[in-house]
Length: 150
Length: 150
DNA sequence: TACTATTCGAGAATGATTATCAATTGCGGT
DNA sequence: ACCGCAATTGATAATCATTCTCGAATAGTA
Ligand SMILES: [Mn+2]
Ligand SMILES: [Mn+2]
Ligand SMILES: [Zn+2]
Ligand SMILES: [Zn+2]
Image 1 (cartoon, each protein chain N blue to C red):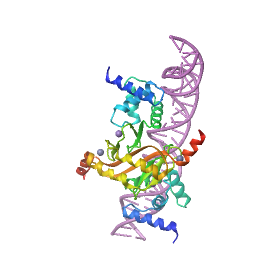
Image 2: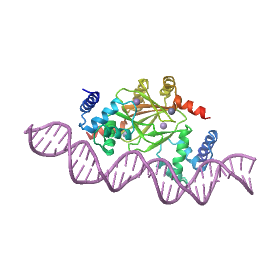
Image 3: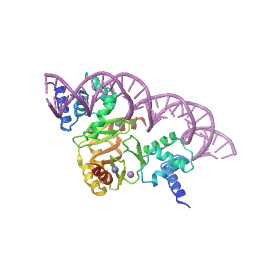
Image 4: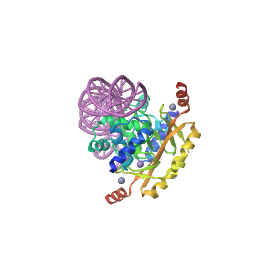
């Protein structure tokens, strides 16, 4: 069995686990997010699905992503200066370091920041579902590029 | 001297400190953000400025907010399910607990999460400017309201 | 006070997201 | 395996938040 089929099946399993009705579009979108590490935009997801021989509309991409967000399977990241949202499978907690110059997003797998969820619950009485942490700065490449320009 | 004038002067000082050219519009917008604790949306800011007798256009509100963000004086929070951005003066680090049902935003003044900035720098080589942490959940009121409905 | 780069602002343009709604489909029940 | 139907899809139109345009107004400087 080829890798592509495996990830489709893994996505189907995850949908079943979360009691989300299975469709080809949802399977492909979720499998892409589960395996890619590039925090894709809506447009990238749309192109990926069509590029793999599945039919899909932009509306379906938007609907599916909102559904996955509501189920806490993925998160939305405001990283693109152009206002585009980026999407990320979020079963393993991690945080994001974002370059304000080139919009690169780097994963850091350290869930210490998650400790604050308990603190938030005690302080506010909220029932906590999820949390995310974003760090903004300049990536090494952009630091170099910008210092050369000066 | 009335309070309103004091906060306008405080805003003017802050603009000078950051070498941002002073204008009436910028003064009012910044003074509103410095004193309000309600994390206003663009529309709320626009109405506040006009409601206090100053002329302003939406374009100027957008431009001013972007300028303040670029200077790390304020942050943008994606809290409104309706996709509206909210704005917050951010000189004193704190994080936000957001109700996914009523979009309420609660401040928590505990900057432990800021410790991760140093971790991020070491892991990635980024030059770090800023970071923000958001916790998503249900506020006590919405917990009650939703459990009564069931 | 005069000069000039910067900012303001009304309205138009853009473009990302959402709404529509008829056709299709997944899936629990028989 | 087939039915029945609620849920989903998708082409397209509608919405509306944000950005652009460019002439007028203005802040800061000397
Ligand atoms: Mn990630
Ligand atoms: Mn705040
Ligand atoms: Zn970069
Ligand atoms: Zn609430």
